[in-house]
Length: 366
Ligand SMILES: N[C@@H](CCC(=O)N[C@@H](CS)C(=O)NCC(=O)O)C(=O)O
Image (cartoon, rainbow, N blue to C red):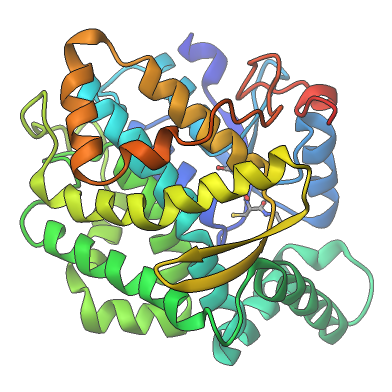
């Protein structure tokens, strides 16, 4: 099994949220790989081979391609020897997957907001993307910079609910996560104990390649959450052969995970529900109120799948762990919003091939 994995090519960028998450996992597991810097033309190759124009993507030595960091990590974690990042204990496994999904998806908007709404950050990153990724696109540098800046503003700021009315709430998502994580990393090196697990890699995505890198949020992190700043370097440098200590006692999760779960029940899960309901009505956009803040947001089909997957993970919990998980979900206000939408049907990965998608059938027809 490991022979087929060795020396895979990882297509991504040094400034990409999900590439950073995936690289940290590969480094920790000590899985040999070669990073290929994406260009405009290799992005087209990735889209042809996986059906998804996104990074990271993996080309295996046997010619197969993979995409989507969560299923890639799950597959590689099981296939590669050494300590698994997915906890073996079913209670911890479920909550780790929940936190990974929350961190992946709910911190995306604040991360993109800080990168593209603040001028010093936008100037730096538009320069980097124009020179690093778009080096094979014809035209002067200023035009490539302007083009990428306009695109990101259109997609991720004006097109993703970032307005004068929502800005403060979006920034509060970053600051409260920083506060919660800083408290945790003041007491132990990783979220679940003495070695990294899936939830660490989930939070690493936004924290490493956006919040810890872009000038405006990085300054906030250094000033307000130095333990988080320290954890970034610790995780980046962690290797399974050296960092392999014990986890929190099986059958339970750390008490200090609860505030994160409570936030999830108040913000992220209601958002996922509103998104899934809008999708079921074939709407392109929807309005939702989160903690008194009114958002107008585009429907995100992949996040319908996130809800579908989280519900399936909950249903698959083995009986001996189910009552503990259910009680914890209920106490943190997550149970009702997790199960509120019956049958979210995203149509993503209809043949259940993730992370080895058939490019022609990543999505079932609407
Ligand atoms: N669910 C995917 C998301 C991947 C993703 O959205 N990657 C971003 C960069 S971090 C991307 O490729 N965006 C393409 C774009 O902005 O057009 C994963 O976990 O890998």
